Length: 134
Image 1 (cartoon, rainbow, N blue to C red):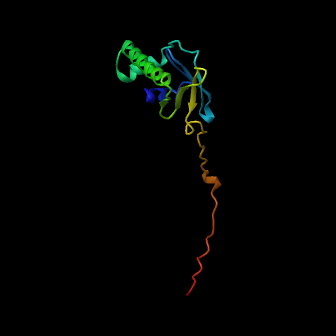
Image 2: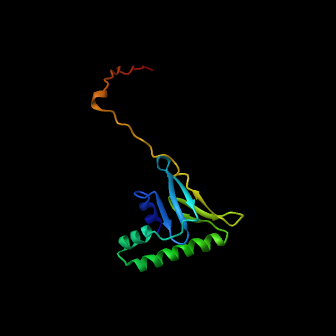
Protein backbone atom coordinates (compact mmCIF):
# COMPACT_ATOMS: atom_id res chain seq x y z
CA UNK A 1 0.00 0.00 0.00
CA UNK A 2 2.90 2.35 0.77
CA UNK A 3 4.19 2.12 -2.78
CA UNK A 4 0.75 2.80 -4.23
CA UNK A 5 0.43 5.99 -2.20
CA UNK A 6 3.89 7.17 -3.26
CA UNK A 7 3.21 6.31 -6.91
CA UNK A 8 -0.04 8.26 -6.91
CA UNK A 9 1.74 11.41 -5.75
CA UNK A 10 3.70 11.38 -8.99
CA UNK A 11 0.51 12.43 -10.81
CA UNK A 12 -1.98 13.45 -8.11
CA UNK A 13 -1.90 16.36 -5.67
CA UNK A 14 -4.34 14.73 -3.25
CA UNK A 15 -4.73 11.08 -2.36
CA UNK A 16 -7.75 10.15 -0.28
CA UNK A 17 -7.51 7.10 1.93
CA UNK A 18 -11.22 6.23 2.05
CA UNK A 19 -12.61 6.15 5.56
CA UNK A 20 -9.47 7.73 7.03
CA UNK A 21 -8.44 11.05 5.46
CA UNK A 22 -6.40 12.57 2.68
CA UNK A 23 -2.80 13.49 2.11
CA UNK A 24 -2.34 16.48 -0.14
CA UNK A 25 0.73 17.99 -1.73
CA UNK A 26 0.69 21.62 -0.58
CA UNK A 27 4.05 22.53 -2.08
CA UNK A 28 5.36 20.25 -4.82
CA UNK A 29 8.72 22.04 -5.10
CA UNK A 30 9.40 21.18 -1.44
CA UNK A 31 7.47 17.88 -1.49
CA UNK A 32 5.44 19.23 1.42
CA UNK A 33 2.46 17.09 2.44
CA UNK A 34 -0.48 17.88 4.70
CA UNK A 35 -3.06 15.52 6.21
CA UNK A 36 -6.75 16.39 6.09
CA UNK A 37 -8.78 14.11 8.35
CA UNK A 38 -12.14 15.43 7.11
CA UNK A 39 -11.60 14.18 3.53
CA UNK A 40 -12.66 10.57 3.97
CA UNK A 41 -15.00 10.00 1.05
CA UNK A 42 -14.00 7.50 -1.59
CA UNK A 43 -13.19 9.40 -4.76
CA UNK A 44 -12.10 6.11 -6.39
CA UNK A 45 -8.52 7.18 -7.10
CA UNK A 46 -6.70 4.92 -4.64
CA UNK A 47 -9.05 1.95 -5.04
CA UNK A 48 -8.96 2.10 -8.84
CA UNK A 49 -5.16 2.41 -8.76
CA UNK A 50 -4.87 -0.68 -6.55
CA UNK A 51 -7.29 -2.65 -8.74
CA UNK A 52 -5.25 -1.74 -11.81
CA UNK A 53 -1.89 -2.54 -10.22
CA UNK A 54 -3.03 -5.77 -8.54
CA UNK A 55 -5.17 -6.96 -11.44
CA UNK A 56 -8.15 -7.40 -9.13
CA UNK A 57 -11.69 -6.06 -9.13
CA UNK A 58 -12.71 -2.85 -7.38
CA UNK A 59 -14.41 -4.70 -4.52
CA UNK A 60 -11.21 -6.60 -3.69
CA UNK A 61 -9.21 -3.36 -3.85
CA UNK A 62 -11.76 -1.71 -1.56
CA UNK A 63 -11.32 -4.53 0.98
CA UNK A 64 -7.54 -4.04 0.89
CA UNK A 65 -7.94 -0.33 1.61
CA UNK A 66 -10.33 -1.09 4.46
CA UNK A 67 -7.78 -3.48 5.98
CA UNK A 68 -5.09 -0.82 5.56
CA UNK A 69 -7.26 1.73 7.38
CA UNK A 70 -7.93 -0.83 10.13
CA UNK A 71 -4.16 -1.32 10.52
CA UNK A 72 -3.58 2.43 10.79
CA UNK A 73 -6.38 2.89 13.31
CA UNK A 74 -5.27 -0.07 15.42
CA UNK A 75 -1.73 1.26 15.58
CA UNK A 76 -2.57 4.88 16.38
CA UNK A 77 -5.34 3.93 18.82
CA UNK A 78 -2.74 1.82 20.66
CA UNK A 79 -0.60 4.91 21.18
CA UNK A 80 1.88 3.94 18.48
CA UNK A 81 2.67 5.61 15.19
CA UNK A 82 1.80 4.12 11.83
CA UNK A 83 4.68 4.64 9.42
CA UNK A 84 4.42 4.91 5.68
CA UNK A 85 7.96 4.50 4.45
CA UNK A 86 9.09 7.43 2.34
CA UNK A 87 6.15 9.66 3.31
CA UNK A 88 5.76 9.93 7.07
CA UNK A 89 3.85 8.72 10.11
CA UNK A 90 0.35 9.00 11.50
CA UNK A 91 -0.05 9.49 15.26
CA UNK A 92 -2.78 10.62 17.63
CA UNK A 93 -2.10 13.72 19.66
CA UNK A 94 -3.14 14.26 23.28
CA UNK A 95 -6.54 15.57 22.13
CA UNK A 96 -7.15 12.39 20.13
CA UNK A 97 -6.74 14.08 16.74
CA UNK A 98 -4.82 12.32 13.98
CA UNK A 99 -1.60 14.07 13.01
CA UNK A 100 0.73 13.40 10.10
CA UNK A 101 4.46 13.82 10.66
CA UNK A 102 6.25 13.95 7.35
CA UNK A 103 9.59 12.21 6.88
CA UNK A 104 12.46 14.69 6.73
CA UNK A 105 13.76 13.13 3.51
CA UNK A 106 10.51 13.69 1.61
CA UNK A 107 10.11 17.23 2.93
CA UNK A 108 13.03 18.60 0.98
CA UNK A 109 13.09 20.26 -2.37
CA UNK A 110 14.13 18.07 -5.25
CA UNK A 111 17.64 19.12 -6.15
CA UNK A 112 18.03 20.87 -9.46
CA UNK A 113 21.12 19.93 -11.40
CA UNK A 114 22.24 22.49 -13.93
CA UNK A 115 24.17 21.24 -16.90
CA UNK A 116 26.35 23.65 -18.81
CA UNK A 117 25.66 23.93 -22.52
CA UNK A 118 28.49 23.54 -25.06
CA UNK A 119 28.45 27.33 -25.55
CA UNK A 120 29.42 27.73 -21.88
CA UNK A 121 32.55 25.66 -22.39
CA UNK A 122 35.55 27.14 -20.63
CA UNK A 123 39.11 26.14 -21.40
CA UNK A 124 41.42 25.95 -18.44
CA UNK A 125 45.18 25.73 -18.59
CA UNK A 126 46.74 23.47 -16.04
CA UNK A 127 50.30 24.13 -14.95
CA UNK A 128 52.60 21.17 -14.60
CA UNK A 129 52.82 20.06 -10.99
CA UNK A 130 55.95 21.15 -9.18
CA UNK A 131 58.37 18.34 -8.45
CA UNK A 132 59.77 18.53 -4.96
CA UNK A 133 63.06 16.78 -4.38
CA UNK A 134 63.88 15.48 -0.94
